[in-house]
Image 1 (cartoon, rainbow, N blue to C red):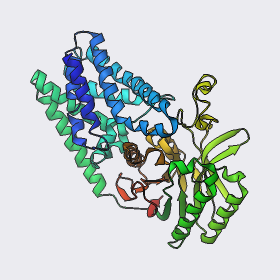
Image 2: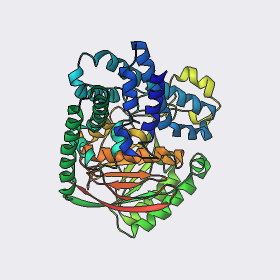
Image 3: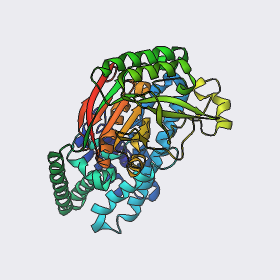
Image 4: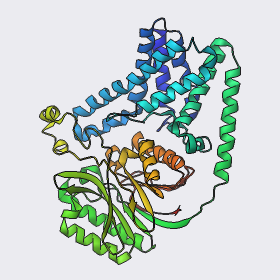
Length: 456
């Protein structure tokens, strides 16, 4: 029973290390009670239960914001939330089981083996259609900019490794009276922080400057779901874009589904947007649904300054129950009354980097920015900056909005390039290659965000 209580305490403490409390130092001690519960578990089954309880406590709190979607999906939102934290909790149960089985055999190497096991589990739980990276310990440390610089060559999982190492060292100090692991972990932290400080302080912008205008229309989700208001929504973005044009940006960005109809098939809206573009001669990147024959995509379409289509990105990783319905033949019979599930988006198996001439844009849409491999693929394909095009109006001012920004900051460090996050309603931001927020907007704010990035 004590082990279970300790596991719940750990899960609750770890939640506080993330937004909105954002008490990031707690991450360095939050796992200590959990690790004690695993070490003192009498059986493998008991260790498994402690891991499951920790995982469900932590993930249910970290992803509690999912429940705000009940405004549109009703009771099924809570079912999805419970299903997700049980599914994700199972990965922490596996971690606890393996820790319980193997730590007696590698007692002198736990300071390496335990954080390595944790990092591997973090990676594994992001795999598959229901995988998430939310709750990865690296995101809790985004405020500590020098520390996250290690992600530039060792990925975000290296940051998680360091955090778990400190927790394990504290456990070994208390239980085994061994101070060497703690001294080693602190020494390693100092080295990483020293390297990070050097990397941050020595950074200088280089390359070609590109001025970007992000149009944050602040359109509520209820309005966006009323397709009869599509023209009014475009008018909002049109008006704000005309204000931006006076500042002579090179690129103007409209957020995810800023055009709620199929832009290329809606002639009146398409004509008005082309007229807008020609008046300022900037490149435009516009979020919109896109129909290609029988398939539909969540897309970003690029226009030249002459108003011609010059590129398109189709989203590759879709949100289950948000953009497609898993097990549709069965689930649609249950959810047919909800118009949100009437038609599935398609995933693009060969997503392209958008080359607009002055820059190659590595576009990701919505929660794609939380997956390191997706952004890494954009870099491999020649992207010169990353654009996160998103509509966070679904989540109001919940923790989701701030968690999303944290992911963009980590991706900037990993990719070593500027990240521009264009959100329908906060938080839009320009983030430099060291993960620092150069400019940002607030949630619930109508704003034109003007920022300068550098591309090589």
